[in-house]
Structures are given as C-alpha cells and as structure tokens.
Amino acid sequence: GSSAKGWSVWDVPAATYLKVDCEDGYPFREGLARVEMMGLVLSGAVLDYTDPETQKNYLLYPVEFPVLDGEEELEEVKD
Image (cartoon, rainbow, N blue to C red; front, side):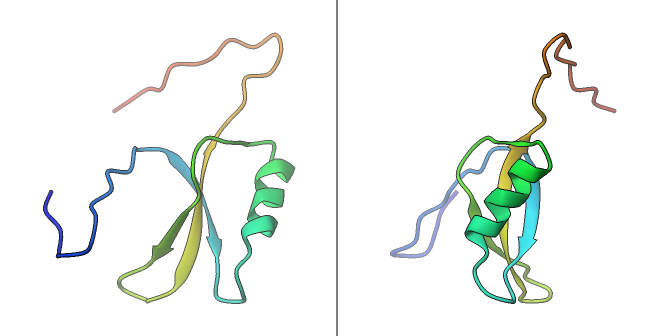
C-alpha cells in the first residue's frame, strides 16, 4: 500500500498476540515475563499499538503455544 511522505507501510503477519496495556508505564519487561509465565514462546518483534477508538496504548507480543515433548503439533483448523 501507499503511505504519507516520510512514513513506511509495514505488512504485519497474522499471529496470536498477547496484548499488554501500557497506560501505567512502558511494561516491556513485564510483558516478556508474562509470556514466559504463561508458557508461551515469543515468535517475533513486539509491536506498539494505539487503539484508534480509545487512544489507549498497548504492546502486542506475538506468541506461539509450544509443542511439548511427546505431543504432535496440531494443524490450525479454519472455519
């Protein structure tokens, strides 16, 4: 797509994101700790996101669910 002068367009891949509220500071490390605590795997770069309706700021952590030893990876089922 096109963008305004001085801006870049990023094509962000579809993923599952853990959304962390940034209104009480900039919780980058806290978000990483939450990913680990939940047993998830960070799968890409963390993104800044501002909700256009509320103007609230978030960090989006792209995550994957790990395959545990002895388990087979399941294919995603789409409706």
